[in-house]
Amino acid sequence: MMWTLSLLLLGGFLPQAFMEPHAPGQTSDADLHVLQSPPSLVLTKGDQATLHCSFPAGDPNGKGAVSWHRVSLEEDTSSSRTLSFGGRFSLAYPKTSLGKGNGSLVISNISWKDAGTYFCKVWLWGKEEKQGNGTRLVVYGHPNQPEIYLQVHGQKEGTITLACRTFGFYPAPVNFSWHGSDVSLTALGPAELWESEAGGFQSIHYVAMPFSSTWDIKTITCSVRHVSLVEPLSSNYTYDPGERGLSGNQLMKYLNIIKISLVLGLLMSMIPTVGRKCRKMK
Ligand SMILES: *[C@@H]1O[C@H](CO)[C@@H](O)[C@H](O)[C@H]1NC(C)=O
Ligand SMILES: *[C@@H]1O[C@H](CO)[C@@H](O)[C@H](O)[C@H]1NC(C)=O
Ligand SMILES: *[C@@H]1O[C@H](CO)[C@@H](O)[C@H](O)[C@H]1NC(C)=O
Ligand SMILES: *[C@@H]1O[C@H](CO)[C@@H](O)[C@H](O)[C@H]1NC(C)=O
Ligand SMILES: *[C@@H]1O[C@H](CO)[C@@H](O)[C@H](O)[C@H]1NC(C)=O
Image (tube, rainbow, N blue to C red; front, side, top):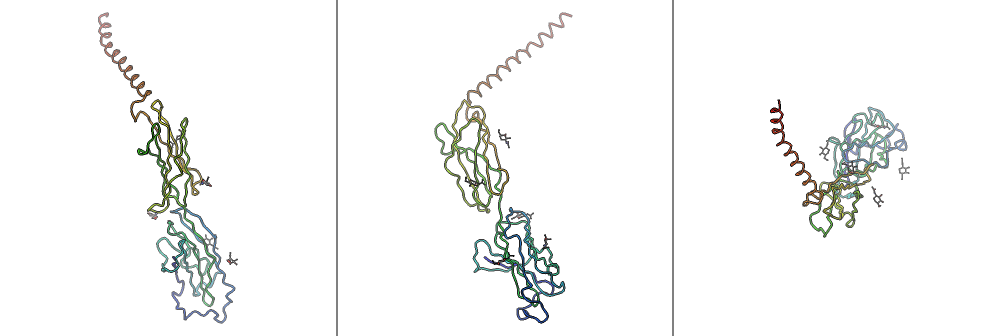
């Protein structure tokens, strides 16, 4: 898909018929060169993008135009639509681009659909229109905080299945890693990966964990690595066997509580008796 953003500066729109590439007294075409930088730009969804475009500064009162067009990643050049600046798209110098020789484009709050190659096109009165070599904009998405949950289906005898899920990342894939002290976790195949409706990808990874009713509470960590992250994202899951029936350890804890209550109860019942005895002795 290709569309054009254009803003005609100082003098407004001039029909093609008025364009005279070799007007007398003007410098040659070779003088107009449009430089775009950087060649490629990797940012994260929500960031602000500045795509630089520079050219020899012209007469601030002269006629000309800076326009931008984009070839999106899907590259279906048959459908083309023209957009104007406004909203999230603007020029760094909306009124003075030509005088400054700076036609940089600023895109705020970038989204998935902004990805593509952007071309800066400059036309100055009496010169041939030139365009830069393009800036390829890549929009990354951070994965969300992973969520761990117990998979109720597909449990085998003596094991339980844990799932770790994350979404909203781009590009695919994410890498999962699991950690649990004194627990051996077995990956149940590679992570499942699919495209989210909201954009980006989501992924789920399953592990099997042996189950024992004699266990104490265990903490299991799932970490997610992605190209958009410096540090992996981690979440903890606390596995409490007591929640799945009274385990040996749990039973001991309950018995201890009962014992303490009995002792306290005995003490309480003795206090008034002791008090009365003390008073009698006075
Ligand atoms: C053009 O303007 C942008 C935004 O102010 C700035 O970051 C950039 O350095 C300028 N480029 C040149 C070549 O002056
Ligand atoms: C950025 O764009 C998203 C949609 O892509 C929108 O939900 C959000 O409110 C925007 N944020 C700002 C600060 O405009
Ligand atoms: C733009 O691309 C052309 C053709 O590939 C190349 O000759 C030229 O050096 C490039 N210009 C810049 C500024 O990179
Ligand atoms: C994910 O794992 C693959 C294969 O081990 C590796 O090539 C890739 O760099 C990893 N990606 C991240 C973001 O850690
Ligand atoms: C997760 O558990 C590990 C090991 O028990 C602990 O070091 C870490 O602080 C925990 N992280 C969070 C976010 O609770």
